Length: 573
Image 1 (cartoon, helix red, strand yellow):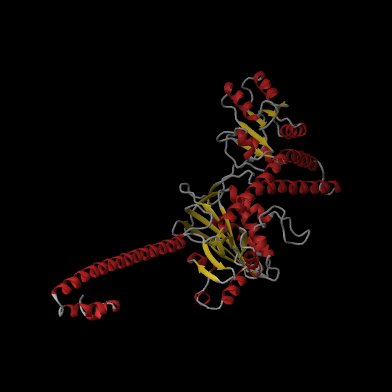
Image 2: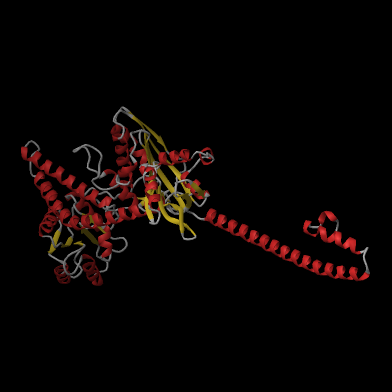
């Protein structure tokens, strides 16, 4: 059996008996040998069963270890943070992702004091009672599923859900799951903002046509009457005030269309450094002496495609906003930069690509987190009544979005704010240093113009302005009437001046019908609608000229002369 020290105690008597057997007779020895064989077989069988049980136990342990490793790896791989508490609130398990989401430092993580971790967690939340009162309430009724949203002081949002933990049918604790939904909520807010702006834009587009027609008539007749009066007369000043009010009304319409992303844009290849340089003298006068302004343009700046006038509006609005955030003075920094967005250098919400970045920073009072989602809403303002319209930043937002760009905000209370605008680059055309606009020494002429306008007051005004400038005017109240006049005069018409959208036959169809017989006849469109509404109705086609309402008498005369001369001009509004 391999030595007495390895023989089980219960067999020691048997061994002694075997030794004694050798001293006895052969018969007795044979009987003892038989007994020894029987016991030996039983011993081997018992050892075999013991080895089998040990092997099974070892296999079970390996399988258990593998299951634990698989569960641990699964917990570590999930994007959700997992926290398990027993019914007393004591921590049983924390996943690595939970530690990352809550940004728990090592000292807190390894502390044996549960209160240390509790205090650290509550200090991060805007509403600490979501832990101090919420968790005990959940644990007191562990059979119910729970779901809520945690708002952190740094602006993050974590979605918290929990389910009871059961072992053998008995509830022994609570399993909490935490998910960072900050990005999702931001996208949802952007969608809500977009839908809101779309609704307002639809409303603005609906009123713009009629409002612009009225402003055209008011402004036009005031200009005509003013030309007949001597500047010394009091009526001259009255008309001046009417024109000023008309301009303010026109500006309001442009603002409405701007923040709804429905205004008329004239994008050209543009160097933002040129725009910034040309604006610099005015900006310094705009902000006052108690505020320091610093220009930080980047050399060799990428060229973008944008409307120069609208980019000037964006810069002015952001500067005014920064100025108003620093009533006791401070510093404004305006910079430009070339930016590449890639998987190595991502930016929230921006597709990969190259951008021109315009930034405006201030050292003002900053914007509270609760207000950051609202500052781009139209008519929302934190200023006193009468000191702000609430259209400045919403106009910036609309122009940037309509230009295909992105607007990001960084702000800390009492630290200041930085607005960053990202515009896609223009890869082909060089940027002009100034806009080419046709100029004329004479705005009148003797040509024949076919005028089609369904609004009687506008029609009468335009006719009067044209006739005052020497033109012969054929007047039509709609497109069908204009087609009949055109047919009667064959190709003696030198220009078609038509409203875009009219009852029945519109301006585009009118132009097409006339050009079937007189293909060289130029067309100048007028409209109080925005470009999106016009596009929805078929558009004007390439190289079309459009005079946006409301317009002045001089703008009308210039646009007509340019169309007759077949020169491309920037539409004047």
